[in-house]
Length: 519
Image (cartoon, rainbow, N blue to C red):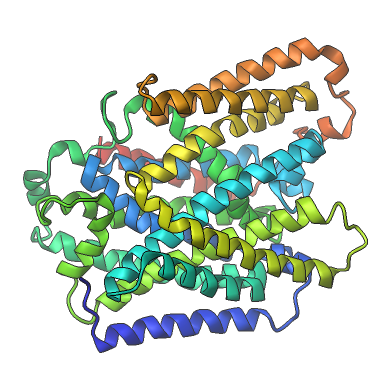
């Protein structure tokens, strides 16, 4: 049980008050649909970078990373540094195309590259992932801790209440409110995580030698053998880059921050800022989970590690900062997913059929969608407790569903010869194969780690799509001078500022140093 003192309650109350204040402030201009969904394309690099980081580092990360480290080791943090690598790659290969296209959603980009069917397909899958993974996972993790703070409240009631609160300021202020609260939340999140990490490290007298002596060596290595239950080395080089590419390049609630940037330099600098911040979760969130092994008695569920560390080792008066960090993570991601899901529903499904609707009508509809999605996610969130750990739940679903999407996106950007029919049939075939492999894995017939399966599905979808492209022939192939081909042409793309190349080099050095330390 986490016992809060008066100062802790004041800190939490102040956080809620400031968050609501920012949301109300962001409504003062009566935002249009463009303002609601993309903040008027006016965001600077600091806002973009903090928002990318805070939207990704959510309560499910604060709960899931320590739990995964406690159970299988710090290899779960491979998802974090891999995000930095993906951001560097995407900045050079995807971001210039994306910013030149000036789209509102990633499915809109897929429509311009292929056709309307592909847009609806990607949008529907993104909405599904946003509801059952990003939003519901975030609400579940936050509710898990709140129920430890307030005895007697149920997990379902708490998740539902958090969904309503977040939906209220998200629907009111739109993306600008989300991003501005993200800046504050990222600072609180980093401060709270640093306090917890330093406090846990203090139980080893702040001596890394003691950590190495008392924590199993297998739990302090990023590169793990092929039979590792966490992240085997083959999954690290095959599945993780694929899942990371989807999350940071195709996932609407993440990419929406980049699309809201005022120009390409702002978007690129924001991405590199976020890439640098993504090197911190290994030290601030994952290592404390591994260091908890000698400190905590055997736990029934790995998701109990973070609440137990706060309850047992955070001194009176400091728990409020930690809990505020959790709430900051929860609100930032939940508000981001709600805003992006409302964007997808409004822009990809309603607006094409209601072209005569005014900006005020679209804005109102977007706010209604925000509330509906929040309620649906709040109802699903309690069901996650029936799975084997939050982190495993999140990453497995991403591996099966996202890998075929990434294959088509990469193929479509790399080859102007891929036509819309071949792309759609290849994607449908990839997802059908994904469903069969998932059922086989559940039945015990496919004894392959889900990170490796992600890479396998990516390659098989590419092969299936190439087969469809060959079968359909020239009739499905875009002409070289068509709008579809010009969309991905590297000719005439805006150049990235030279400082971004230096920033990318620094991030890559940081990744190399991290791998060297925890090989």
